[in-house]
Length: 315
Ligand code: TXA
Ligand code: MG
Image (cartoon, rainbow, N blue to C red; front, side, top):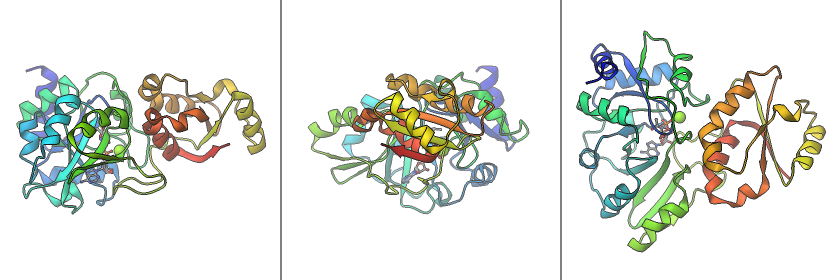
């Protein structure tokens, strides 16, 4: 066992939380069957108890042990997308503490695509709950240093698995009665899901605009250290005019400009916002092209940008 993993397992035994790497963002982990440690997660993050946690498992077998029923579609989806950034919400069984699910009768489960995280879960011998390792409503961590800047080493052991590859949180789907509903968009998009869902007789429902789909999906979320003003329009020229009208004085070369490379933008989004927040201005400006609004691949990134924004102008 690597030294790091051994230290992480021992930290849990000593009553400390462990920040785990995943392909999406770093998570703040505790064993799913230790309510006292789970309470610590909520306290440290300043997270309200009505925001349920995702359980991270190392195998499909372990996922099955947490739920009442495991529809066949789950095997098919797991085969294609696990380990990976897709969370299943399914009816929970009695082993799952209400603290994890905020009293709901469902539980969110995924297998993260990180060798380090999976080895940790296996050595620990139990699944872990892990919300993103940030303070409630604040920007998410995609590098180990993002975590250690916020939490002290006395409270949290940071298990270093390098930078996250995907960069935004997992797609969350609710699975029930031949219907699959996207609760939180992410980089596994509707087109990818449809490929598996349709040919197996399920329907797919997209996230609804401006509707709270799931507890914990607050309007204000993922916020960096300064207010974000997002401008979505056809061209940079338009964006500059609109910024003028809004009285925004950040020069264009210091804006966060979302390029057409969606994978790269997702991968770097939180770092772009952090870097922009470290500049001398009192605000952050984000520019996105209007055509992204009609492209389902962009749903996840634009969802995060919107929630990170104080103002969000589409013109
Ligand atoms: O990529 C991710 O999912 C990351 C990494 C660490 O795995 N985790 C993450 O966790 O984003 P968190 O706690 O920041 O967001 C979890 C969200 C909750 O806010 C809630 O919206 C949804 O997952 N959720 C969890 N359990 C649910 C349930 N039973 N029903 C509906 N939504 C649920
Ligand atoms: Mg979060």
